[in-house]
Length: 72
Image (tube, rainbow, N blue to C red):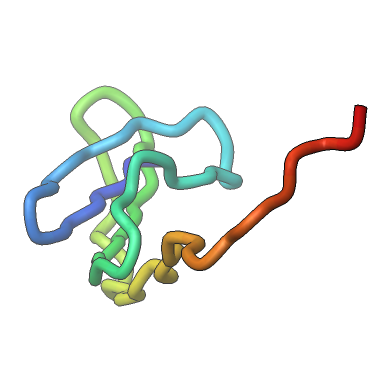
């Protein structure tokens, strides 16, 4: 399989060894598009799948945390 991942500053092609793959290195709160096709041999591939669009989740910074010194 070949995976095409597109985003604001990303246009990446990954060759996959299996049908299951986890995308890594994506920015939070960012829109991406992904398409996949089968690699069927030397210079032979299927048509690209429909493009799937998604937006990664926002991971907000924790604020307002206060603490007390640990008891001795």
